Length: 603
Image (cartoon, rainbow, N blue to C red; front, side):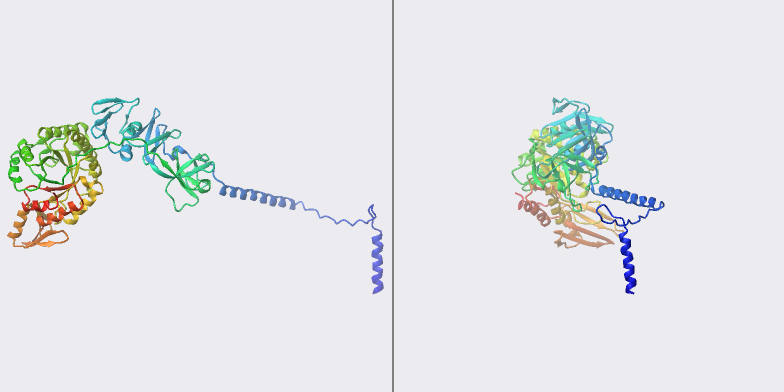
């Protein structure tokens, strides 16, 4: 075996010696034979390679599209909801209004309704007579459609532009004209048309762009770009949106509301928006230096004026009397008057002021408050008629008792109060306005505005359950009265508020069919009902009134009585809330002793 192995080794050595050598003497190693690719394999490999390349490109593109900011620009006309070149978007403070204005000859015009709702509700648009009005404390400003001339009282003024334009059912007023009487600043830009109005001044939160920054429509890098702000541009910070991270909602100073990335802006700082120099009109008022004790005297005809001599003899501590003398009688501003000079003279001789009452009750079935108060000619005729009567009869004041105002007549009624207040100021006549206890159904009486322009706002603190009530109840429970005072004081200064108490009681009957009827009784009449029916009233601490109930022939009779003790509980509130005074409805329904009760708290 060894020999055979040795023979094989020698044979291998001999073959190695016979191999060709390189120039350096070293033998060459034999080449490995390369395998050639089959022609069928090459296309497959190319296809695989291309798949990888295309896939890589697609993945790269997807990643780029996912994580890179969009360069899409928003359609700003669509953003501002502009339908034509004349429309202009309106931004007020932080709010983009749905209302659109008009840009005409390089001047901004707003719909009169936009002005009323957002800028100044004292401007009044008379659509029937195409007149636009503004009541200053002692002058009435008026402008007509299509005119560059306007009147302040009777003096003519001119501007170099048309102040009021009509377009079908809409009227547009120049913003420059509104700015003469309203405290705000504004700027506007074109392409797209937008106006930015500011009437809230003081300190605001701002952020600054750290570099050139896109403001996007929504919070996200894929949201379209509204505008681009330069480095250092300040933007107002709007309310925080908790569910959105890494973005801040802002308002640019040229009127775009959108979002910027937090990493592109500074931290929040403060900027003060200066208030322009503007003289707010001062609606001066007549304020008595004593607590008012007023009573209404119902005068249904001329002969009733003679009763004043007898009726006043039973009173004590009165400061003011308000006879129901003036009635709206037609839709053109006409009045019916029961004013009497002897009546006024007698009251003045007894130290009483006379505030003539004006009412819309007597002819409520033949007149329309909306017609009277919405038209400038009828409203001013009514003002002139009332002022003429007040001057003729030397009245100290006028008392408005409009009880049939509704939402459609409310604006005109407030304008009537403004216009009447002008003439009252100029003639030293007290203007007081009667109101129901505040409730949702009568909110449009706008006590806040009344409190600004009238001298006194009177709460008719009764008729909690009126004559037509479907259920029996108190005329004026303690809680009802106090709530009425509290709600009124939320809108009217206490030194202008007078609370009225009832001298009457309703005697209720609920029959077996649950039909409810009532009759109004004075204090003596209510007490006599109790005596006649041999029922002893009991004190109810909740209503703070004496309560009576009896059953007769299947019907239930009830009374929540008004007398000295219940009146005292109500009058205590006058002092507690430091009101301007007390009023009472009506003279002749009281007992003489009630005046001493009132004097304990009103003197």
